Image 1 (cartoon, rainbow, N blue to C red):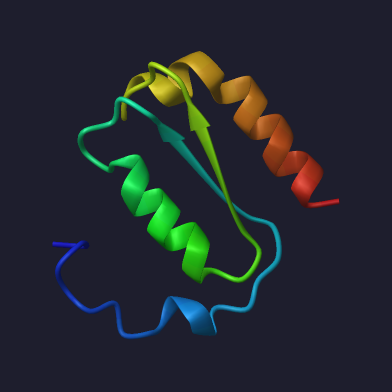
Image 2: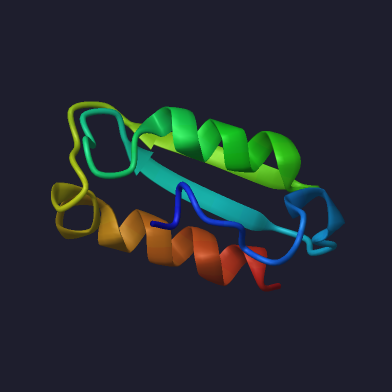
Length: 75
């Protein structure tokens, strides 16, 4: 439903810094194209893709890198 129903705001109106989006390039639940769409519309949005990762394997295989990036972005 999140892909096909209005969110009640425009992504272009979000004013935040350090918006990070992480996607596995083998994710069939939330494809990289969706992440690219979001990153292109969010001011300061950054998309990072991980080769051969899926929706579920991404965090288990890359949680340290993602958490480190989150902590660095908050500084």
